[in-house]
Image 1 (spheres, helix red, strand yellow):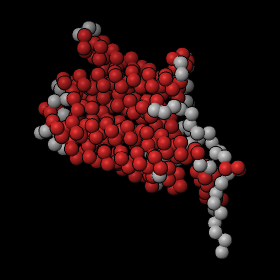
Image 2 (tube, helix red, strand yellow):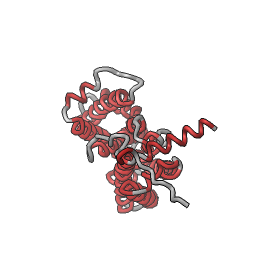
Image 3 (spheres, one colour):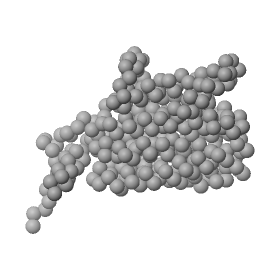
Image 4 (cartoon, helix red, strand yellow):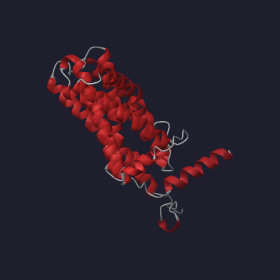
Length: 298
């Protein structure tokens, strides 16, 4: 019996180019955008339900996270003018164009909302900006997943139906984590529930990504990406468990919040690393193509 031949491409060269985005700029951009989006929505809902401290924390986190996200993106692009050039037109068929037009207005609205609340100036405009930022929050949480999925990178593209939900769940737990760290115990009950819902969604979708995509699920389980995503699962579960005592113990709230935030970072860096690994190995490009072709011919 002849052993099965090991797959390789011509000269062992990758078929796809490795993603050229910088690290840690882009994974941080993914994380900070999700944190800002969920925090804006938390702030808006907290204001409506009479939780002023929670609303303030959410506004500041939304403004700070969005600003830091823009800085990370511009640093990756190399020049601020390149980000401005992305705003010259709005192309609905381009996730990059639509994402730019989500990030730019959201950042401005979040900054106006936080600035107005902190200074007491233009309060009606600040409240309106905060409400608008809260509405845009879910889009901020998920558009970066669409950016990744709309590439030829195998492990990102094949997960196109899952990544938005994974990023949404992770963003909710990250926003809840920051609120647990900073908000008083008397106001965190809704955040605890939101974090539990986000954690459940994140863990369920992560399992699908890591085991339900066939061959291209391998990069999510192996190497550096596998270690990061395994850590993310453990931290998410720990954050959820600790948050159950957040209304009674500030120490539990702080520990749970820190675990949620660390999990969010691990998720973004892990997903990014999985995409890089899948682009480097030709088998993740060719073998799924052959499988799809065989399925069509049956």
